[in-house]
Length: 364
Ligand SMILES: Nc1ncnc2c1ncn2[C@@H]1O[C@H](COP(=O)(O)OP(=O)(O)OP(=O)(O)O)[C@@H](O)[C@H]1O
Image 1 (cartoon, rainbow, N blue to C red):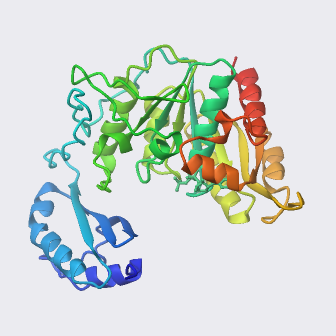
Image 2: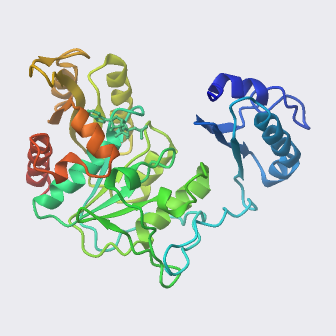
């Protein structure tokens, strides 16, 4: 049986009244709704812990109503609230194979900028909107830099849809022998950490505001990175508070903005560029992803999303175009299968090698 659509799920939620009047949808309390293969997951974001408690019966009602929808096999609803007495975050996933217990994440951030010990450079990879290939570029760039001899770490700060465990093919949970230090798993020579590794897999739990930043800060500062030439950060899409706080709290060396050639993506990219300017984070360059489609049968190259947009934008801004990456089935399959192309000897790895060399030249 097919899953209901997002709109059908929202229609059900809009019929459940809140104690204070209105409903979950009209009060904009539903976050991160995912409807996928019979499973419905979302977060109810209450404004205060008191409101969260008052909403518990609503959560139960929503769960029952959604379970009654045809095509829904599972419903997972998480409740979050910010504020000083917010509920503690749920326990992280059980550690695998006798590893020590994972540490508690989701604390409030500490004030002031934080150093990341042992890390020489922090490279933030951002985009104005989701789905343009920011995670793909982050993973491949990290690997390409490592293949040039740099020691590299990768942080998946894309809390809204952590994808690095899948892209880098990491299944192991990080260990924490003392409950404080996080020992990151290593994949393709890269030390990788993702908030996705700290949470049970099916829990689409989204932290926002202070809790979220506390979790990220912990990921950045409590991981035993060792000495790194560069820490690559896969940022969440857009220009929200995570980007702001990351750039304010950590000494970010520079940012890379990924865009597709479509106008709308460019407009979004411009917004991301403006945000970095406001934050005084230098922009190292633009990456144009999915710039052309090369026909696998005849080798013909087609600019299906238009030509030259990113180059023109970069020229106008005096920024380098670090790479123009074609749409490629190989890139998608390898990234989604845990072996990014940059780790292979495929011709597609060449663009990433060139980008890594250019960046090393810029940052050395
Ligand atoms: N050049 C490319 N050719 C083909 N597929 C690509 C390419 N770049 C990315 N993809 C695929 O597009 C999808 C989205 O890419 P990715 O997750 O890297 O984007 P993102 O910008 O990080 O998205 P989000 O912000 O939603 O996490 C993935 O399935 C990825 O494998």
